[in-house]
Every structure is written in structure tokens, then in C-alpha cells.
Length: 376
Image (cartoon, rainbow, N blue to C red; front, side, top):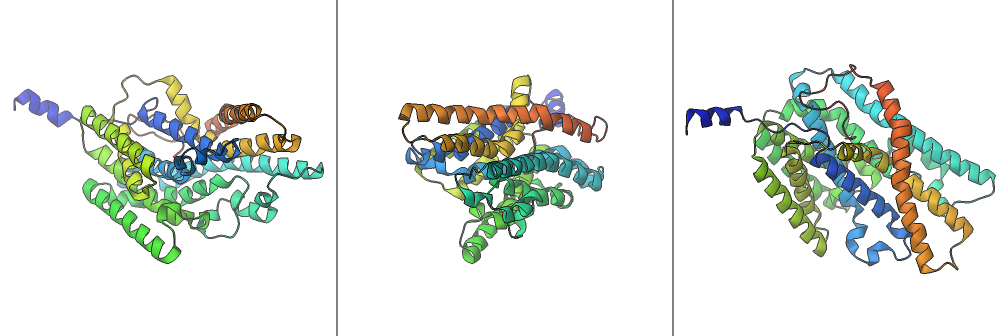
């Protein structure tokens, strides 16, 4: 090898993650599929009857958990591992990123249900709006065995579980950051051991545990994302190789899902896809893709409320005598309304509030990483 080639090889560094690239594409696509999953039963023909893949929303939730571990570790991992970032400042930023938006959404839903009750209108499924279940969900403690949290804005159990993962990240990074392959083996081993234990003692695979065990479900998946981040941040892989591995993993995931859920294999394939997306340099960042990726948190947080309100209104009107075409039209407009509602919430509340709570200069972003990232 020539001296020039040796120098070029020595200066190669892993791609820095940035907005407007493939990570944001994946984030938005997963958020859109989660919306479709939550709307599937409201369709005139439940989508699960078309293909069982539409009933596998647990895979999309698990994708978000893995992706959260990856993105947060890529942004904060080096500084948390070296002690270069204050743990208290990091924890404050994470909690303020989640709680204001969550509390506004759950308070808005509770106010709507209360107002409807005062007007003499009962929800279509009153069992999902038990007031005794609300406190655990509002406080985001339902993923730790605390009674409550069922119904209402049900997907928030994921945020509950992730908060525990967020708060553990500094110690995870300090223990694992310097050992990419050992970290990968440990993460995969922990996932397999947790899945075996979960099936043996709780009767469910770890990746499908109910919300009261949400933290136990999330932690092994979050660690998969962290392991992918450690490898991605410390080992250079040529973009062509990363792209080929990512496309191969996506093709394999598509084929696997056409046959059956294959949960563990699907989790590992999704991890490879996320790692590959982060290994591709963002040469020409797209502002549109950036905004779509940034909107994914609002999509995740608000879509269930939109679904409840939209179809609650039409259930009150009555659709029994409507044609199939009209019912599909109502469903499609409701699906679109979930995206519009998320955009309104993102730009009307979440973005300005975050700019106020975490103003420029309040934290120092990692080199090459933009300050605002999709919610992790």
C-alpha cells in the first residue's frame, strides 16, 4: 500500500449522523406505519384480514426503541462515556423533551372525554377511558408495574419505558463505549437470555410483553441500539458496504414478514438497517426529510388521540347505512388527519416549547450532530 493510501486509510472516520438523511427517512416511515397500525381496525375491512403483517405493530414499537438507543448513543455516547457531559443536564434535557408534550396531549384527551360526558355523549369504547387508569399514564410510570395506564393514549407506555432507558444511558456508555464487538455480543446475548426468561416466567416473548413489564421489554432492545451506535461510532465501514448490508437486511426483513413474525430475527435485521442508515454519510441533507423525521415524535404521540376523536364523531353520527365507498373515504381522511394533526402539534406547540425549554447554547451538541434530533 502506498504512503498516500495508508494516510487516507488512517484518516477514515465513521460517518457522523446528521439530519435530513436515511435515519430520518426510517423514522418517518416507521411513524407512518404505526399510524396505519392504529387505524387498521377502524377500516371497513380490518387490514389484518388482508395480511397478518398489519397486526404486527409490536415490531414498529420495537423499531422505535432500538432506534432511540442508537440515536441517543451516537449523539451523547462519547461525552457520557468520558464524563464530558453533566449527567444532570442530560437527564433534564431528556425529561423536558418528553413530559411537556405528553402532558398537554393527555390533558387534552381527558378534557375532551370529560366534556363529552357532560354533554351526555359516551365514548364508543368506554372501558378504555377509566379515570382510575389515568394517573399512572399521566405520570408515565405504567411500564414499571405500577397499576394503571391502560387505555387513554395507550402508546405512551413506550415513553414510560424509554425514560428508564434514557436515565441509564450514561452508565451504559461508561461501561461499554470502548468495546464495540464485546458490546454487540453482550447486547445480543442479553436479548436472547431475556427472551428465554420472559417466555419461561411470564409466558410471552420479551419483545411482546404487556405494558406493565414495558421497561423489561424495552431495555434489551434499547441496548441493541446502543451496541449498533458503538460499532457505528468507532468502526469505519465504506458507504457502499453499509448500503448493501442495509438493503440486504431490508429485503430479508420483507421476506421474513411475508411468511411470519419471526420476532428475534426481525429485531436483529431492524438493528442492522438502523446501523446501516447511520453509516451512510448525509452528503446532501434534505430539509423536507429533516422536517418529516422531526415530526415523528408528534406522530407517535398524537395519532391515537386523532383516531379516537375522528371515529368517535362518526360513530356518534352512525355509519350503518353508509356505502362501503363512503366508509373507506371517511377512514382515508381520518388517516390523513392523523398526519395533519401531528404537524399542527409539532409546529404549533412542541417545537416552540422545546426552543424555549432548551434554547440554543443550553447544551453543547456533539461534533457534526445538529442540535435538534428526532425524539429518541
